[in-house]
Length: 132
Length: 62
Image (cartoon, rainbow over all chains, first blue to last red; front, side, top):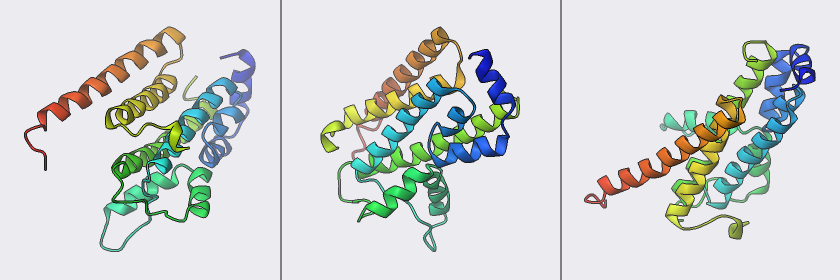
C-alpha cells in the first residue's frame, strides 16, 4: 500500500466506506485509495454472482414458515446493486429448481453476497484505522 | 454467458474453489508471496476436501 493510500484511508469516514462497499463490490476499497485491490474484489465478487445467475440459482426472498430464508435473503442482499439489478432484469428470481446446476447457483449467489458483506466490514476497519 | 461458465460438476466446484481462494487470499494477506501461499493452500484444501467428501458419500447416492 502506498503512503498516499494510507493518507486517503485515514481521512475517510468509515460509514461512507462501508456503505459504498455494499453498493458495488470493491467500491469501498476504491474510495479508500486501494484501487488495485478494489478492482480485484470487483472482478471476483461480480464473477461469483454472475456464475450464480448463470447456474440458475435462487435470489432468495423471505418466506413465511421458512425461517432459514431470512438468513439466505440477508446474504443475497449483501451483494448490493448486483442483487437489485438482477431482480429487476430477471424473469425468474426463484431460480430453476429442476436445473442440475440449481444448488451450485444458490451457493454462488449466497457466497457473492457474503463476500461483499465481508468487504463492507473490511472497508470499515481500514477507514477506522483498525486494519493497516 | 452460459458458454463462459462450465457445466461439469467438478469444474464448477473448481471454479468455486478458485474464486473463494482468490478472495480470501487478497482479503487476509498483504504480501504478494503470502497471498500466493494462502491461495495455494485454500484451493488445494477445497478441491481435495470436496473430492474426499464425495468419495465418503459414494455409498449413499440418495
